[in-house]
Image (cartoon, rainbow, N blue to C red; front, side):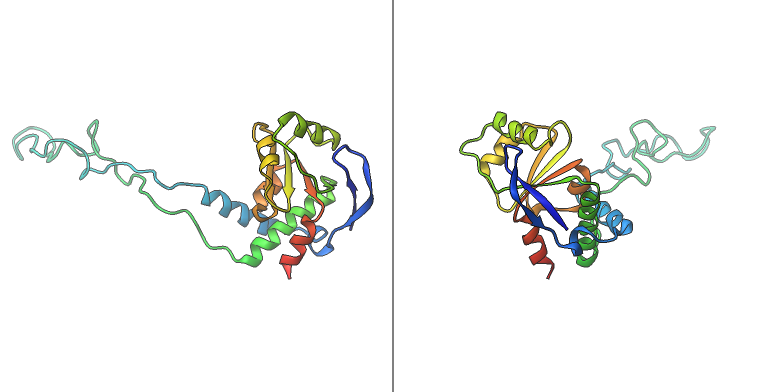
Length: 208
């Protein structure tokens, strides 16, 4: 598969980028995508939710009334869950939501997401570029020129660029990541992907 390479002013660079069909043109596996996204979202959960049971509630431990002769049911503690302020029964406890997923499945999910984007024509290849200083206005001009502004746009760089990152962080619809940070969730969350020429070669090299 080949894609035209653009300059940051939106004009054609006069060459094409070669995309590996084993990455950008496979038959997508929806189940692998589901598992990878599920694991990613699970990893974002802190798992620190906690409610107090009756052994942790700060109340008196004195027996509320005598065992017999009170005319009602027996009650041994105001900490019981039937009273206001009492402890919770089977309440949430802190725990880890992470689960294991094989590397091959995660790789298949990423390639499936990239194949979906390529099939939908949602990938734009751009020449490598740098920004001399952080300027959000200049970054917006680049997105406008590439017709990638006004929607959720993911910009993938071959390496970290502080100025490009700082220029984009105030834009809620734009996200800048490096090729090392690619995952299935961010690929699918974006409506359009602007990929710097060379990223596809790094992805292909790591597949081997």
